[in-house]
Image 1: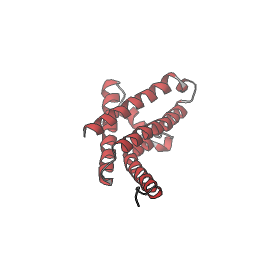
Image 2: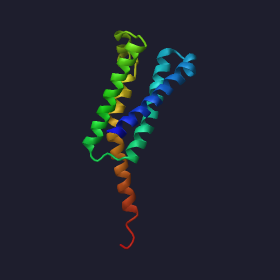
Image 3: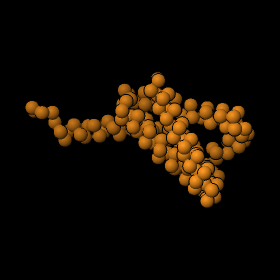
Image 4: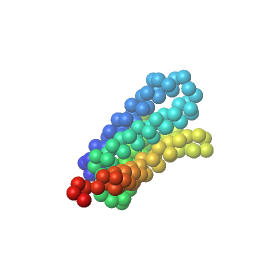
Length: 142
């Protein structure tokens, strides 16, 4: 559990840095919706790197363990988003819910879905690669 929480903290730091890059960099030059969409794409990619590295270093013991990790990370992300941005940053609930409107071009739900499924995706990917590698290189002495 400690590793899962530490991994989520790394994801949080990566996400905050992604938001800072948007706010002080390319977001100044782009339409706010386009900046949000680009930031979501960057965030999805960056979080994929973090989750993929975690899954490779500490493989999930089972598919259900990977799904539980994704569920935990999803719950922590949504809780942080609403608690921090409402109570600390002062955004209204309505402002926060706008980010969930796919019909308005908001892609935040896509990133949340990725957080939930990525552990299972990377577990399967790394297991398939390991299987392919072991079939190409049989143990010595056979």
